[in-house]
Length: 173
View (cartoon, one colour):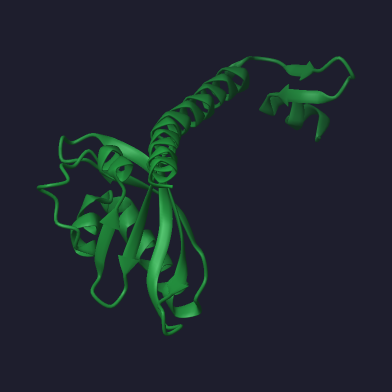
């Protein structure tokens, strides 16, 4: 049984690493955290040097995302809702990462909601790719709209895919 447990734990750690997803527990009363090893790797902090006070984690959140994070957390706690948010964090080395955190309230042995259990996934690569697609789309829109005359693009079924502002002005489409 001990061997099966060790094998299961090793498989779990590999799955977390492959998915770049870690798990955490927030003790709401103490505002302290416990993190999986993968979450330490995602946050790029040393397990032995990082305080697991929630306020120290909050300090890692990008300043533009901090208010939204705290507001969403308080709403989830007050309404006993699931917590689901994407924020940027700034690692101790100064790197910005995007993480997707999801959590839910979990009762203690007495049935009192004392813990927030959840996962945090590093989605930096996906967000960078998404932002590149948006930037490329914006660039191509800018080019298309700067063309003199009318521009439009159809797919094979004849559906309009893209057009410039001039087409809208002429056709009032």
